[in-house]
Every structure is written in structure tokens, then in C-alpha cells.
Length: 382
Image (tube, rainbow, N blue to C red; front, side):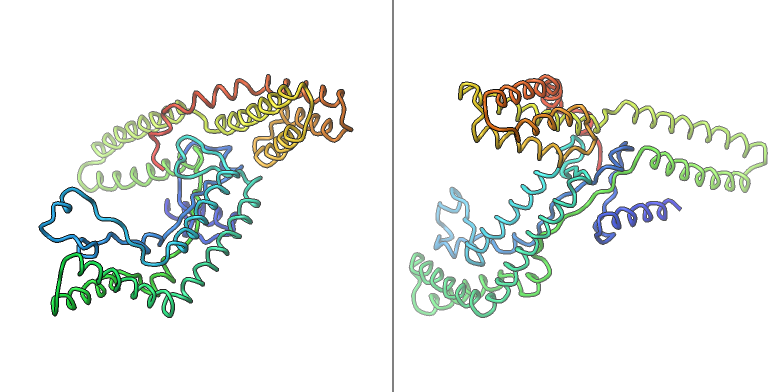
């Protein structure tokens, strides 16, 4: 019964995000409100390690008795040209940066990022664009792998083997056997065409947030099933009176454990407050930055300050999942001033509004700095 309920929840969340069910993992936390407002996302990159291997001492031309084996470490060799590896790494970095721009880093969720449903469509569109670029790059590598890259790398391995043999001062038959051995070992380490097709992926995983009510519901179901099992066992082993007595004791223990668990949940900090304070803290930093720019320019509202102020409005509307009406009103007023004709009156109006925003959000900025220290949320198991 418990498994059926969890699978239905998983299927509902997968349908909400338009992804396969097996890409939704369950994350049990006390998040009644955040459950309705967003999801957890983690970037998942696989297969890049198949392009590198640790070099052998023989390939480096270091004799077995050399002291360098004890004093130095072996380097890393690339199994495809370095520019391809850099291109894949660049796409991975861009995917993680794009997720960071559309999400919050909430304590206790790591390595997941919390993405509000207000920002999810924009993030999903950009992520799929990066995945398409990844797949095009993979197709290029796969096309060139058998006919261009492998022969080219075989030539490189042969040159390495010849240089190593020269460094080891090998001659005659031993030299030829050594070169053939190094080349074969290098070729054997190269990933297969099928491994690249199936294993080289840029993807993401979504985590489903389970609310306190759902957790308590599952605990109640489990407790009921356990009670029935113990009741049947007691009837088979002892008289009715003894079985009833044991069942009362077990029921009291279950109630005490459930109350203890509820008390633990009540003592935990709310991640909703972190989302609220993080967004306000960001607005505080932006407001202070714009005011600093204006101060450096004698109170004038120049281009950089205007762009930063408009970026504040755009970022707030993208991430305002909790509908912060008070801050929304101030930003709407500032946006209206920004659209007015340039002049001293316009600059003064914008400056006054920025001071009001900074006054409203400075406590949130302090709270975010406080939450940066280790907390009880880090002890939660995702």
C-alpha cells in the first residue's frame, strides 16, 4: 500500500514536469508550501571520465628501477583531442550556471537546487537547448571517432611508444615488442563506440518534495499494518487477554514514537523563510550597488545604474515564487520612474525608492549571512 501511494506521487510529479517517472527521486522533508510552488533539480553529467586515463610508467619512458617512480606521480593522457573534452566541459559548466540563475540554494537540499515553478519553464527551455548542443557535439565525435580520431590517436600512441623505447634504450626485438605492447594497451583503454553512444550524457534529475502531511499519512499506514500483523501473531501464540495486553503496550509505543517524530519536525527551521530571505537579500545587494554607482557619479542615473536597476526588476519577477507584494510594489514604482524622461527629478525618485528597498531588505541580507553557517538542515538525509 505504501509503495502504491509513493508511486502515484512520483507519477504525478513526473507529469507536472513532463519527464519520465524514473527521473523523479523522492526527497522527504517538511515542505507543505514549497511542494506546491517548485521542484528540486540536479544536473547529471556522465561519460566524460571515459576520455582520460592515467599514463603508465612505460609510456613515460621511466625505467622500473628509476627513483622517479617513488618521487613523482603519473600524468593523465587524453583518449580524444583536448578540444573535444574542453567543449563538453564548457557545456557542463553552462548547464550548471543556467540552473543557478533560475534556482535557490536552500540548506538541506544539496546537491539539488530549488527551482520555483515560476522559473521552471525558462530554465527547462534553456537546458534543453544546451542538451541539443551536447548531442550535436556527441554526434560529431561519434562520426569522427572510428575513421579520424582512432587512427590519429594510434599514430600518436606509436610516437609516444617510440620515444619511450628510446628513453629506455631498447634495441632490436625488445624495442619492437615494447612499441607494440604500448600501442595495444592504449587502444584497449579507448572507450568503445557503443559506450560513447549510451554513456556520454547531459541530463538532470528532479526531486519530489514530500510534505509533513504525506509523511504522517505513510507513518500511520505503516503503523496500522504493523498493528494488524502483531495482533494476528499474538492471537496465535497466547490467550486473548494476553494478546490484548501486548497490543495496548505496542500501540502506546507507536503513539509515543509518532509524537516524538512530530516534535522533531516542528523543531526544524522552515526552508520557506530561506527562499524569502535569499530573494530579498539579492534585491538588497542590487539596490546598494545601484546607489553606490549613483554616488560615484554625483547622484546621476547613468547607463550602468539603469541597467542594474532594470535587471533587479527582471530577476525579482522571475524568482518571486512567494508573492512578496511589499517588495513588488517598490520595484514597480522604481520601474515606472526608470521609464520617465531623464533628469534630476527622475534620478532623485529612483534614489529614494532604492533607499526604501534597501531599508526593507537589509534584515533579510543579514539573515542570509547567518544561515550560511552550518545548521540542523545539513543533518537531513535526502
